[in-house]
Length: 125
Image (cartoon, helix red, strand yellow):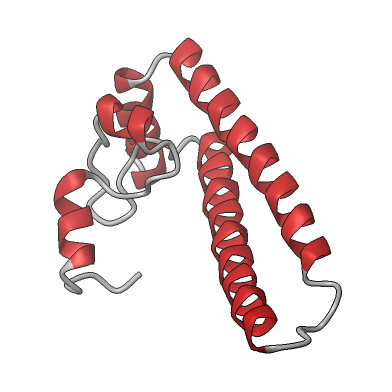
């Protein structure tokens, strides 16, 4: 059996289609909210800062904008994994990601053990 089929089997055994549909819906709703946030933040950056307080606010808004755009990218990757059948499979060890974790963090790409390794700098992603 190829590695890709193995991943699909793991995913399909652990997550029912209705569960995947709910997670997809949650991801799409989160994405839409983030897109709206990005639009609003972008509008607020249309004028350059005039003074020191404006500069601080501008920089803070710019950082928030970058964070929201990064979250959109993560969600897009999760939606791609849903499409190609690898959603719910850890990107590092190919093990199953627990449903509780996916429900809490639907755009996660690591199982809990690999996430800990990633946060400790032991994984290159």
